[in-house]
Length: 461
Image (cartoon, rainbow, N blue to C red):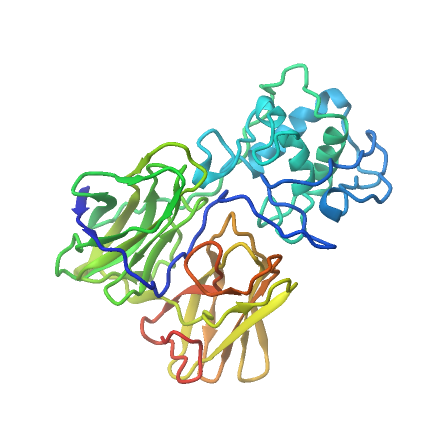
């Protein structure tokens, strides 16, 4: 493997496409008091303890819990184990759905670990008068900012958590739950065995890691000279090499014209699958590694030398189709009014030209976004939904189009981002987590074929 070291470049002022990915934890949310407010984020204060929950096997009557949100309600008729077994069942759920970020490494500034019984019994990060498990009991019922993100917990899992929290979070006979089976891991695509060359691109400058001061959030821009020189290459796999997950918020590798190449966020630690006939464009010139660090809640200096490992093919072995990532399926004109709920920001791209195939979609926004929807309105009237799901700041990922979605001339691609702004200020587009974005970074082929034309998404093609 060739390791390529770079020199730092000055911070770019107004970044065109910053902040593609964000971390699992991040800063605690700071909601503005209102008559009705959203349930708090994990690690945020709650104004009242969770209402008393049901006993094992009983249904709970409706009740009002923290911050005016509906209190956890057990699912009627769902069988619940005896109290002595509850903790190990709850731990199994946490291990399979939560601790990828909420672990002893506090991945990307996650505010607490949820791995051990002691972790759940510790004082909450933002309210020392309450214990972590009490906030867990509220957070798993948050419908706007769901936790865990992506796939919801089952009725049985929620009922077990509710009953365990209502009982005061008792331990099992063995609080380590040694008999629990290990949670299944993700299906990791095999790393190719036919790489012509493998390169490591590191955020370390001249062999020295970046330093991140306590109480800071920073966005260094690192100049990268293509390690393959002037030779033409295709990427067929890439994977993150994470040095300090505690402060690494995200990174993006950009080409010479600020075109998106690869990105990372917690949960994307393995390479993505590509169709066997597709390789991804890589430039033969300078690139920029845009790194976002978040040590805002830290109390000591941190260091990081994260980066990306890339498997490439040389021109003689190129795959027949070359893909690239478009930023055209994004909206930059964002202005979410203070106090707005379910505020939609929408943009569209009407394609003209040759047919193209959309291979994957990577939605991105910040804390006030809670839903993303991408559709294709075909010229013949058919509507294809590419993605329509809740969005969570703490965990963002890439969604493969299986099969790929064919976009023909006259087809209209629509992106809709939904925001709820529980602050006293208008939120506009910007780089920091207090601003907002509405991105859909889509991998498509053939490279250069997608044409939104005049009147498409702001920001060009």
